[in-house]
Amino acid sequence: MTLTSPGPTVGVVGGGQLGRMLGEAAAPLGLELLVTDPTPDCPATPVVRDQIVGDFDDEATLRELAERADYLTFEIELADPDVLERVAEETGTPVHPAPETLRTIQDKLVQKRRLSNAGVPVPEFRAVDTAADLREACEELGYPAMLKARTGGYDGRGNIRVEGPEDVEDAVDDIAGPAMVEEMVDFERELAVMGCRGADERDTFPVTETIHREEILRESVAPARASKAVRERARDVAHDVLDVMDGRGVFGIELFETTDGAILLNEIAPRPHNSGHWTIEGCHTSQFEQHLRAVTGQPLGSTDQRFPTVSTNILGDVSERQSAALRGEDGILETPRAHLHWYGKREVYNLRKMGHVTLTADDRDGLLADARDLRDGLTFE
Image (cartoon, rainbow, N blue to C red; front, side):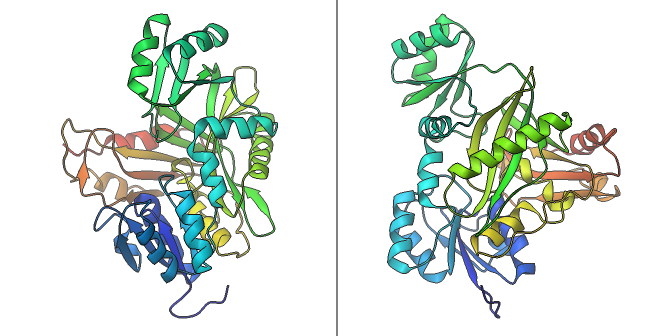
């Protein structure tokens, strides 16, 4: 890549909060971002060159994006891999990660099968098409079990806990489409590793502990409160996952640490991920800068951690959809080593991700409690 003014352009499918943070990371690298998103004036628009308004799978929209960009990537799995592959070939604009990786990731059953076949440790799983399939699978895997929609789920949507035989019919009806069921993992904690694939190198960010409630990520703690041996096993599994992926970029790799210290893969996101937001302040290179470096073929940056870091999500706390007006942010802005990230979404509703708060310290003791106090001082009511 040769730096010029104006600089090389990266076209991003998606202009939500991830597109916004990619835009913030692009400017110091001399890159310009162009995003496409169906929502006019999407969250990324204040920090990118331009937005093309159009659906994530609209061929005309993605073709214009490819024609105006030097590189293509995506920040949402709703991008159509077939269309991306076609417009990339016809315009000569490379797309990373590879569309084949997106095809694999979009279908959770395909994802699990491919990783399992590659030797990556995963929970026991079965394909489910009918209530009879789910009942038979749960007789093998045991109750409770987790039923997942094969496509489209995020932030707990599309995941249903099946407590017993009496829940089978309703669970299948609620998913209303192709599904898979997994054994319920008895885990000590949930972990995440942001993996990086560059042109000729691979790397991982430090292993992170992720804390969920209602299947929505609430806090990320880095380094994870796990033993060194567990963190090393998690990193090894992440490298095995990277071996299966195609193309360059950052991958969010979600893991379980079981009660006996084993590591199992949960899911993968072929893009920057919520569990890696802490890297903006916590590492020498953020996940967003790293993704742009990788996509454009530049050398990867250092993933070394600068100091212990906790990131907490700012979620909507209102009962009805309304205009977004955050209150209580002065408490964060007045706190040393606290950082507010606002995503610029115009409307808030219950549990919608509206921003995050990052807090750093010289040691990890008390850091999570302090970060929670800062977040709990915020409200949209």
